[in-house]
Length: 525
Ligand code: G4P
Image (tube, rainbow, N blue to C red; front, side, top):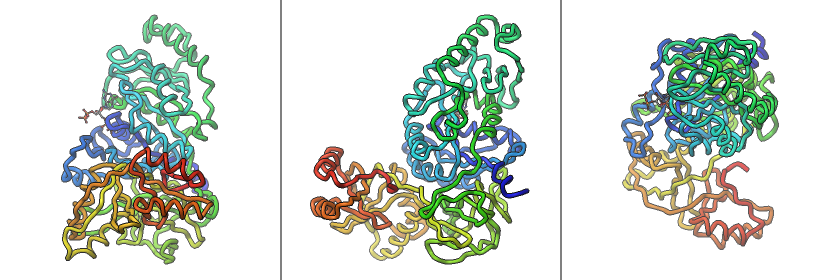
């Protein structure tokens, strides 16, 4: 197959949701349709269960599973689909943000009873920043929930994106009868079942009396009324607007009952983008280019201390990736060959000889890779787009075993390269500060430092509001600011200036006192 055909048949995306909305269930049903698994329940969730007090051993067990489910590739008709899994636990949100840099589109799952929840809102912000095309699946229609028009309004307001329903439910909860597929003009009748696929009735026109026979006169009348309203309120579905991330098509269904999932998938493969050009510092790189290029968006450490190896996940951006071919590792300036790259097909890890744009290749690694590293067939390229966001929690990290300072430093550096958390060094007292999204990451770091590096750390509390990357065209102002705020100035691991604001008030004052300084809440600006 020509490389252009390989590219155009690929769909690389992530499913995101607030925990419990049904991401795992939907993923599993998509795999069922792709023939990648044969029974429901085969996918164990990658989610680290939700409670804030998750115990660490449980996380470790689940991490083992999550390597296998990190990327799920399967064929569906002529399409090659790659689903990139994201951790459900919000303390690992940074992982999810990075995964979103490796996808071409996203499916957001929303619970019909709960509507838009915090995690969904934050993830959508990342999609919006990147203009990632989004499809929304409103789930759990078999349960009592909110009025679908209310849900649409909430989606628009909370996610700040226009929506366009492409399917429409007939009742909800106990009286749920099915959905009308606006995209394809079919009626899908609901039968609660976890294993079978619903029956599709093709109808020429929603006004035909057949609809009355199938769902009853009252519900048929309500459906017609609703559809009329939809056509009146929402502009016709505009595929270009979807591809530009301006409008999100909405589907309704019940993942648990495998209802509405096939419709979602069929529409998804048709409208979702094939691998897109990726922006490097030097230029835009098109997937069809001959030269191979790719970047590392995730590093997964093996948790077994006896086999300390990692898998670096490389997203292929252009050209053909080949096993054993010499590729240039930009940051190290070295040429490397990879003898055992793996692909993730149907949940199995297999050694692959080649991969195409949109694919994810797993490369066994013993410390060569950092998140964000670029590989190419030779050209100088550095991919952008792996921003760090201001952490939510900060602590000083201290050495608790003076004999093991070296091990501690090495461990901290490697864990930061893996993207477990962010390191800042306070320029005033030279102390190391670790910033995370949640408490769990501190536990992970402490545990891993001890078990993988033999180092012991101690945390000291530090109350900070935000880390802001600062820059200015006015060097004097920048120097003056750094002097004034010297106790709160740090550098990140790339050596960039970071202002650690201890309250929102302090930050606002700083912004108004130093108007020529730009304060950024993510490391890429
Ligand atoms: P997540 O990955 O987004 O966290 O959600 P997950 O798929 O694990 O689903 C969360 C819960 O919601 C699960 O129940 C799941 O069975 C249920 N669920 C998913 N889709 C539907 C649906 O369409 N209808 C209904 N009624 N429930 C749905 P659980 O009790 O937490 O887990 P389990 O014991 O069923 O696995």
